[in-house]
Length: 68
Image (cartoon, rainbow, N blue to C red; front, side, top):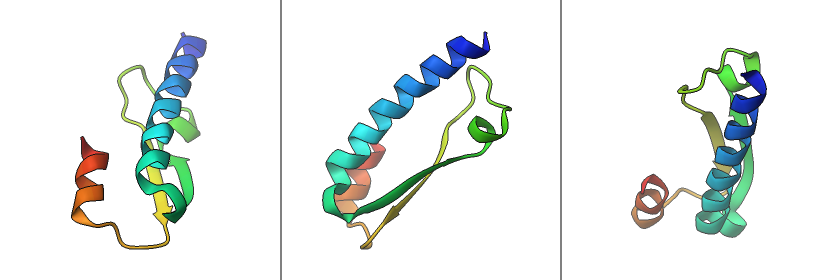
């Protein structure tokens, strides 16, 4: 079961990173994975915790695009 979760999470992360990169472009500094995905407590329906670091404050349009 752990392998299936890892593959699923990997696919989800790829999709999320694509969206982040598309909307943040040159302002993106780093994306950090933390929480249960890192410490081994991730379950099939757990959320995935990401910390995204950018060079500028996001405007409202970009924030909304990332949420949707």
